[in-house]
Amino acid sequence: MTMKTIRVSEEIHTKLSHLGLKSETYNDIIGRLITVYEEEYLDDFSDEEAAYYNERIKQFENGNYEGTRKVDLNAIKEKRHR
Image 1: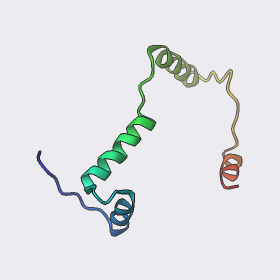
Image 2: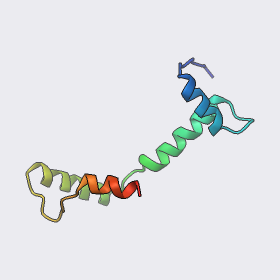
Image 3: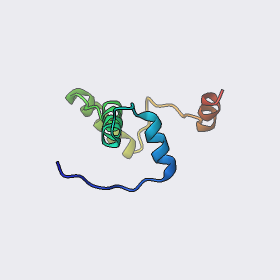
């Protein structure tokens, strides 16, 4: 396997150290974090879900906001910090 060198700040290096098990290399830690990220945020949509979201996007782009509601972002931020 070809290896690459990456530069990280001391702060990130410390955080990576704390996230890893004693037997893990930084490569192992970063790989595990990427896997968790992919599982959480890059799940594939079913064809039905993708069609629904694509249709909703088209509606939004055409100014049709029917079935949506306005959200107060400040209220959400306040709620998260309680």
